[in-house]
Image (cartoon, rainbow, N blue to C red; front, top):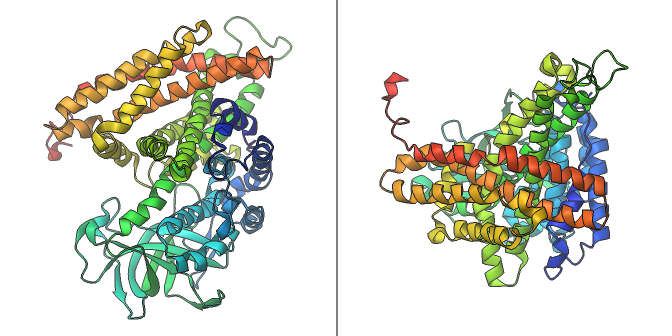
Length: 596
């Protein structure tokens, strides 16, 4: 039976010592997030994840969801009670404004709780996760009436939310969508169409489901310029807030998926369902992008969560599994063989996963902190800088953390040998569950194209230039510190590789766009590697400071070893990525389609 322990201690270290979130006490919600409150929130969130969500992960995968003849969906045994515990704890509204029943705490805390949930039980945690995304979209673009009608119940957890974009013929290219909306003459619209791959589209966890649906109003322009967003509840809501009649929206079938079996992924049929416009006509993508960006960051967190839980179980197995002898001589002479953790290649694998996990956790928390600053700061310059960094890092968090998260789940499975390939050990579930994160909310190739095509040139490259300057300044400020040299010296050539890649693309991609397409994924991972290296440098600085104080010395020394491992064995990958980018698109595009 696989196990999971929420990384509470490491998260506290990152929030308090590396990111020093107390510096932002001037921002709304941060003054309430005192060190005691932060510790209490993370401890309770960790307990919920480890003790309530995690024990249902394997059984939920084995049982899956069931669609009944009437179109209703039953979630696996125990999911309803676990969801109720999540809702009762107020976790849904951790960072939602108090006026709608939330606690108004920083989003960075909510991000930490999201990681715990994703590591403990990805399928179950998606139900509240999607609701939080829908809440975010309504907060920004919903009318006051819509906010009053839906948000308190969603924050309470009594109602959940979804995002309905994809159609059978229409995935990434949303301009092709066919779902239509016809005005009813009373301010509402009648929606007709079919949506697929709708996570949490129907279930038995909450009394109502609030669908956010993109559709085209009759007569609207073709393409993405004619897309509008609608709120379509499963049950209509009466004027007094009580639930009314069933709306004409139903689950036609459940998708038979590779993983996340405990989450109901539905084909949703809208047969003249009543909905209300969110925001302006024909500007639905602007509104939906709020939820999509929230989801992209949350999916990156999912990749990290699966990497963490896979690592934890691989380490436990490696400590116990006896196989062979250490190359330098028996390490456990009283036993028939040594535990496999003595072998260098096993250690390489485990350290590679852990070095990624710790830097990846720093990255998601740093990105969430930038989101808090962008949404809460009164300083326009500070707000703009945070917004720039948030936009630049979104495709990196989504693309890099999920690519690497899946690869790490596979590497962790490898530690078990043949036992990793059979279901009873649970490792295959982590691999299967992690795989979806590379696909949904924009496949990772699309994330790479978004980075290179939109985020990189936006505002004259302002965000990338700010990042390059920030890292270069950090290297300069700490380059003479002997203790920091193992962490900043390797960062310089990696940063040089990133600058060279950006320069090459500026010189070669505009005249030949295929060069950008061929190098996009490598650029995303090159930037990701530099960001993770920068995170490790900041982690090392905080670890050195705590070690000098005599605090938690053994744990801090382990971090310094991991940081050096990353700098020596993982960061140099930037030169490989640069070489691939400079190769251009010539051979990639040379073969005619029929030659494949």
